[in-house]
Image (cartoon, rainbow, N blue to C red; front, side, top):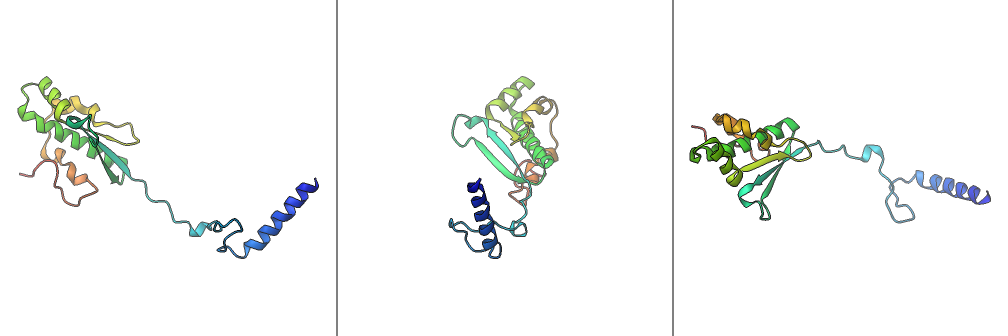
Length: 156
């Protein structure tokens, strides 16, 4: 009991001594804890898309990450457009739907949103059956790392 009383007294003394000097280091050498107004607000949540280059799959660096998407919807649409563009690049050389699927599995890109359940690979059957319009392939327009659409379908 006496031990508890001594600890409480020391704690009270310590708090009284250091409450008036918030920027002074405490005796253990660490700076005093920051006040709530000194803590910056958290950075806005951004999303990342992983782009798997299936041709280089076993190699290191076969996955390219694009981050900075402001919302989950934009990240999903970027993944969808990029994968659909990859399918469309193989369409002129494919002789059938099955051949197109095989070519995409060998030479294509598959995108998914990191920390989300969406993977554009899940839409592959739709991409195989429906050729994309140029605007549906223009994933560069959604890329947060560049201001100008330089990737994807060419405007003609």
